[in-house]
Length: 388
Image 1: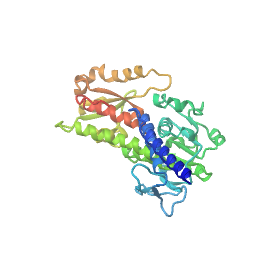
Image 2 (image 1 turned 180 degrees about the vertical axis):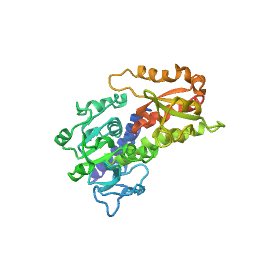
Image 3 (image 1 turned 60 degrees about the vertical axis):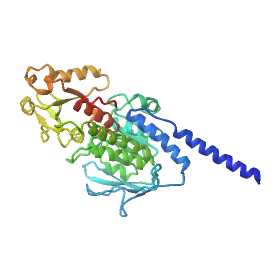
Image 4 (image 1 turned 135 degrees about the vertical axis):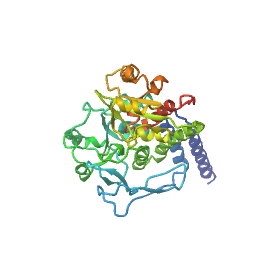
């Protein structure tokens, strides 16, 4: 009897030691690393308090694929243990259909065969440590961050940039994670067709085909929703909390500045410029960082509009695609402003405040939202000396 008791005591001590050892692991500073660091904390919490669960509420009348209002909050939660949250299935999550209207989808368990299409979808799952749940991936514009390369190399990456309906059908996924643009007549068709066949769909909220503003909150909620769907809530919250704390730190350091910097976020086209205004994700990001948009309502502007606005800072949007040299693309886009005699009178040009930002950091940015926040912050407050 004494031997049995002694063995039980040793087992408990070893278990406690394991938990402490795991909790001591750290992560890097990139968005991918923050997810990995949070994963270590999550494992430790599961070892020490495996019996604790977080209840995730769902609408009593939830039916997979049924429509809901834009304002309705589908997922509610009550925290039982701050360091360990668990999903109680079935769980109902709000997403969007092909027409941009909000719908509900219900998950009986964490998806096991996910098709992830486009940059943010792939990188978010990797940041959450879910590479083993990905049956196939497609649609990368750029290489994934270094911190994700090992996990990415283990994936089934498709030759098709946008997978065909036939390819997807053969894969037999239980979930498709992508942008709203994937679900059109010439690509994968209607979201409801897949949902009715038993394949759940989650669309990045800032790509839904509707006129709703594209916001930081949407990016946060997408990451948190995926944390709930896959029962990795601690990891998801760590990623989102880092973004929020970075914004708070920037505002605290910039608080002494008397006037808010005026900003335009511009992407040059042939004869005009796309202006990322108040309803864009980029516009929301700079506003939340304490700046003011010089022309918040226009979606397209000409040279005269830019000169009339005369912003303190111009963020120049560039996007290198696979095979492009990123520095070459960036330099070409910056030269549109810095080398044009028409723009030499602009305050931003004269003061050297024409700043490049990659499109993927401020458009449906997912985990790259962290990079976008940092890029915007450095451009808005160059004298703050941020050390992100």
